[in-house]
Image (spheres, rainbow, N blue to C red):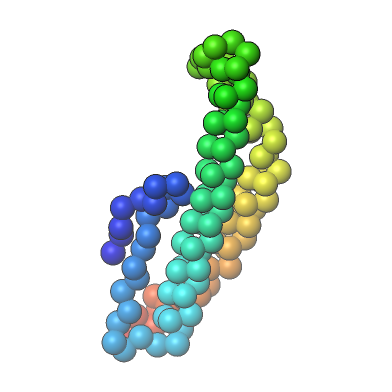
Length: 117
């Protein structure tokens, strides 16, 4: 079951079905998936909170200097945020790829167990 997206992280909460005859292999794979959703939520919650706090601060600074903050002004912030968070996003993406690769074999094993039932 999917819930509505979180207000800040935009990650939808997932409630995975637990069959009554779930095997240990299936359970391990389900737990890996649950952990992945939680890790993604935590990363994007932190990322989006940083972004919004920085944007608010930037808007206030620009408004004090110029009276109002325009979209052109915000484009400067957006670019700087991308530059500043590049390494953190790169590390996250690498982690997600590694995690996805680690989940392939357990996913295949869980599927084979399910097919064999």
